[in-house]
Image (cartoon, rainbow, N blue to C red; front, side, top):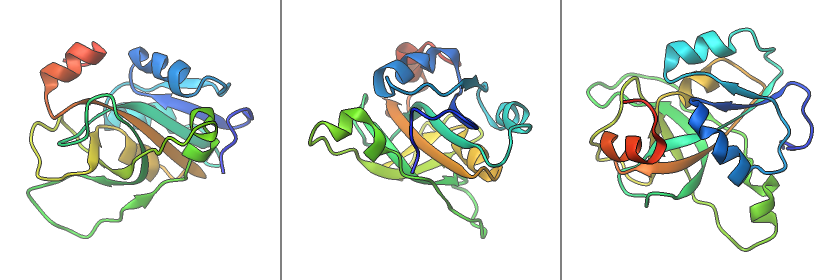
Length: 172
């Protein structure tokens, strides 16, 4: 189980600088170093390839969803790649639970939705998948083989690049 006040080989991973405010809001007592990777697989690999594999990573960032309300915070329990046009054997990658260590959930009866995240190489504009989130980094982070990967995602849009950009001022 991850402890947010211990920082040896522990890092918070965000894709864009604008996601730093999510750390202050949802992880106020976390003193881990922050790594800003950039969006997408190549940026993830280049940013994280030299970290020790015994590192514990917490990815926090925005994600789209077909049906979760914008602003919903979710804990990701598993990540997969999203390739809706073909089927082939590929592992789902389980993640390390984190929500029980967050002060906001220790001091209240709030229930954090737990879901699967589908990572993509492009922005998802339509999907029949429900009760999940879509991002562009998490599967690539998890596939690098770190000791522990956890993730919290905040729903920024309902599969609308325009709504995502309006909320986050992120990639266009």
